[in-house]
Amino acid sequence: MALLFFGSLLIVLGLLAGCLLLIAPLGIIEITPGIGLWLLFPAFSIGGYILLLVTPSFAKLRLLSLFLSSLLLLLAAAAAAELMLYASTLMQPTGSTLILWYVLMIAGGLGVVATGAFDIKKLFSKLRRPKAAAAPPPAAPPISQKPKH
Image (cartoon, rainbow, N blue to C red):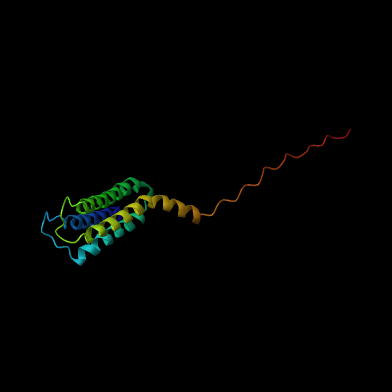
């Protein structure tokens, strides 16, 4: 249960770091993202998913993983939308848009991988588990011989 809690907490902190990187070019709040924030976004997100993957009740976490993965994909979509607004000159960035490309690539990549992680786990578990040997066909019933009188 502790791995589930801390894994989820790390993913949420990673998402928060991604959101701060996302709103930096908007100028809504005065923030100058340092290298620490750039590194914490993928580190917390990946670290959180690793903790979720090693949780003993792995099969029960599918819904939580899909929810958190969807949030990562939503973050990537927001970065893409913001880039499109800047490209169409509907908005002007207050700084470089490199941050948005970074968020788009990291959040999009992690979101796609995390969404498919459970199917990959099933695939690898099938590859590692030896297949049971095929049972031999049932033997034919013995031929009974009639007693000779």
